[in-house]
Length: 324
Image (cartoon, rainbow, N blue to C red; front, top):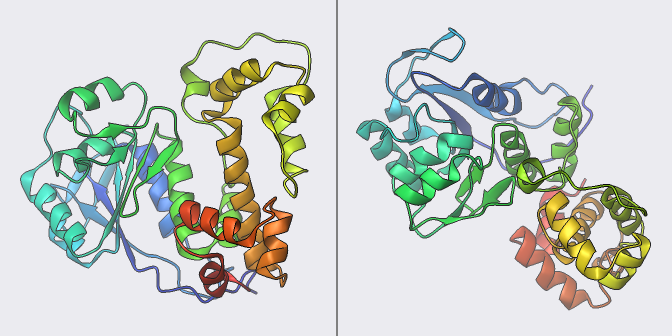
């Protein structure tokens, strides 16, 4: 019995790279999201193939051995390429692998790196002039080797369209779910997240893990302020209102929000409105004007512009693709 029914485009083949010293957790993330059978869906899921970045038999971290039956040449048939880390950020990956990645992207393949996997994309020249992220510990070396990359320090992942890069290892889950959301919509991505026992959207960036602990102050926590705002997404919410609800000054709220969430309250509210809009477009028969109003937009045109800027397509096109 299927739980969900959509008619998405064929998501195509996902190629997961392996290499000597393979990061097993990052590799497991890619396998869990893209290779696990999904009998609850009655539409095609990803076709998954494990690819040798160099040797066909690799020794992974922890003494695990992984065998593959295809090398970098198989990337020519992949729609999506996952790079689950890299063994040494100062070691240049093999040239045949880099050339295969360049050729794959030139014909339209998408690449997603997890944690230190960003160094493979950078070595291939695929991040030149682009935004990207990686684990906060790797950022100084990435900046030193590739000064032409626009490094985003305070995010869990960066989506540049054809290239997605994620922060530390666990952020790979966020990036992979984001790609599922792009391909199938939020309803399917939320279901995959539930099977993983994780929230479909994790609030915050890396700052919450590297910043000094925030001292306890009287008033509501940032999480409580966020819950309050989510209940009021159908109307305008000012920074002053959020600050008052937290018993903080606006300046203090801005600082605490950045420390905890990794973005400003305004940027976070915009993102939450888009999440609500995606859900309603998939599941509700309401008109676009009604959905815009439920998400806090008084103008349908303003909603259309904001949606296209954030999601990359129009509300009508999104509904046509993902509505049940």
